[in-house]
Length: 134
Image 1: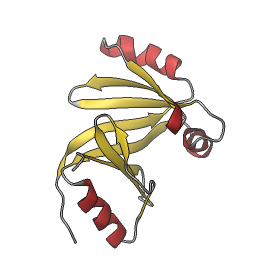
Image 2: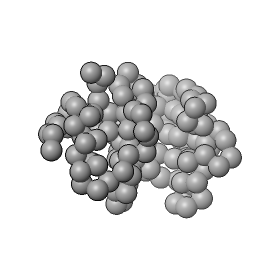
Image 3: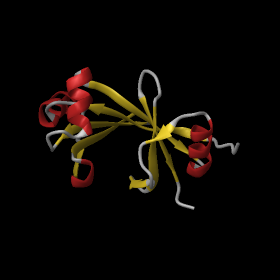
Image 4: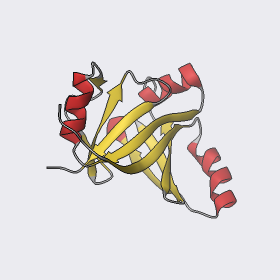
């Protein structure tokens, strides 16, 4: 099985009911301004802030039935995934499959200048793997 190296945590992904209300608390407390984007393909509106060396990404559903809405219904607001930046996405995905785990996307998705995929079936929190295009 191929090996890969974890370079660090790229971001922590939280699901929230109301992005604007969430940011009204976080921005003044930490003296930061969120970068807000919408991703129609993923049915999400997100706000990202950097604190220390970690990016916090708050995700709000923009479509009924989206994975964000399903997460809220099942779990309430909270930490939904940890995104690890790695050096070799293909090796990591091969290792996940070899361990009996499944990937969320058949084809990796571009996100934040990297390619990404999620490992399904992890306990406690979803794991996103992010690596450079080869």
